[in-house]
Length: 116
Length: 113
Image 1 (spheres, each protein chain N blue to C red):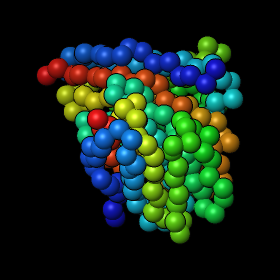
Image 2: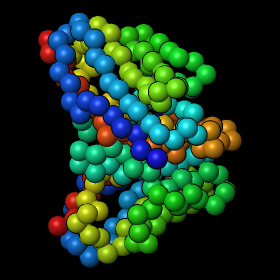
Image 3: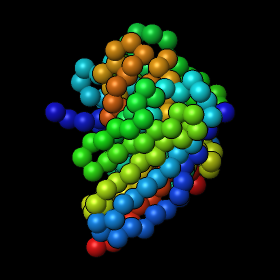
Image 4: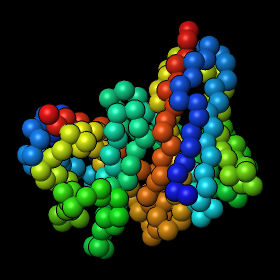
């Protein structure tokens, strides 16, 4: 079956513009994560969705960042008024979660965001 | 206290040699320690993971060694191959949400033929 799909794969935008990044998780996976990978850096947790529970937004760096997950499937990460420091690869991952044990995370190939 | 420190930043190994990457953590609540492998332009993929109730886990040429008292764990790649050339990330989380991972900074491994 298909893996985690992310779009766009590359996005170049101007400072101050809003961007939307999309994630299609593996069918049937109830847990969905967004991570950010800055150049030469490790991965940084942003947000977690599990079923119908309230999302864990504790990793979002500012109120310019938001995310939603519609129908328990597709997720959109929105960055408002983008800044140059937002330039990074945004990675989405999904897993078959059983309670707090989420098991293996399956990552997409990421959306590379460049803010000029 | 939430950090996971990884070393070295880069590593060059001859084909057939042993690659060793080390990680250290502070938060004693961590109880899940995976290693992810990432090739250029791809997302990370789970390589192997360990929980602190064992000191070692081996899968093929890949072994995790875990030292709970020292709060350290390491990845050993035996008989390293050019196809192992990638970036490796250690990570840690707790059983409250094992997917909410704190990642190390990554190690870029190059295996020379």
